[in-house]
Amino acid sequence: MLCQVESCLNSRPLCALSSDPSDLDALRPGHFLVGEPLNAIPEGDLIPLKTNRLYQWQHSQQLVLHFWKRWRADYLMTLQQRFKWAKKRDDLHAGDLVQIKDDNTDPNQWRLGRIIDTHSGDYGCVRIVSVRTQDGDLPRSIVKLCPILYNDE
Image (cartoon, rainbow, N blue to C red):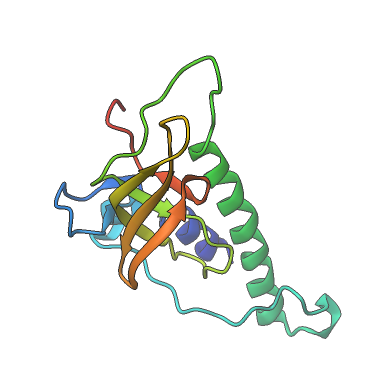
């Protein structure tokens, strides 16, 4: 179980692997450990099941899923900090690599995409962007996106 938790921690994207707009891959801590991204076999969703009905292996998988959901939510919140009036950040731009917040992802799976177009709101701020993913192009609100690295970082 601890090895799977370690794999969850080492699968998060750090920065873009290249500046190529068609490349959707990111550099991860797993690249430094094994030379390639860490992979995991998806397990079924065991969270809604009662603990007393699970075998020992299923119970350990349930604990890993609980950790994954909690850690992923906390980690994405640190990437989406909003400094309302203290510091103004640049809007998202075409070509930026972003993480797409999706509650139904398996452990070690991070949906990544590149912004291909931005759509400004009433006040000139970017509110909606078009994102290219492996599954195709999607319109997404910036609330559901976490930039991997800003240009000034």
